[in-house]
Length: 101
Image (cartoon, rainbow, N blue to C red):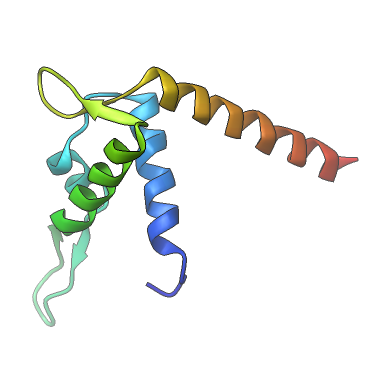
């Protein structure tokens, strides 16, 4: 990746996806962040992304207490995680509102 902060961007994206639609696991994120595998002269074929990155990010979010494992598989947002994300969203909206003026 060209962006040196790509892991933070991916983490923010994953926690947002869990916030919006809980129950997503490593396999779902592999599918979401997958892309085209270029095979030279053959046609391109969809390929899933790496599972290590998704697994690592989810484990770190669990250690931070933002997400927890769901009973039926995948991860769901915790109450503390929901509060944190709501706080960040309000702060981002305030900054955007100030820039518009």
